[in-house]
Image (cartoon, rainbow, N blue to C red; front, side, top):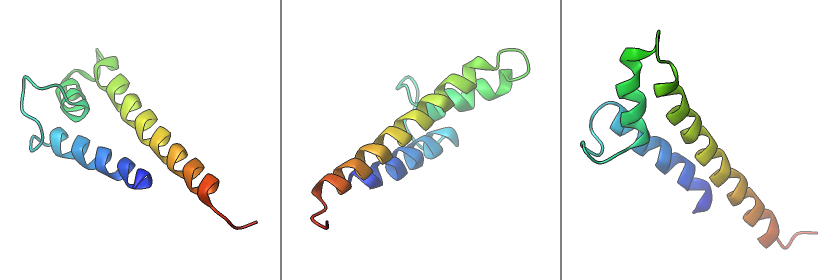
Length: 76
């Protein structure tokens, strides 16, 4: 289940990026990336930092899930 959390987070961020997820004023990383996309040439950090946060969160869940899987594995 932990390994699927990355896909869940990416799906939620993708839906909020296209406007089908949480609606404002509820903050969502996908909405932050979408809102900052119109300012990319001048204020690139508005979109880049939420995108990096999504990447780090998904990577953390994948590494956590892999670690738990290895820990619970009984093969020697």
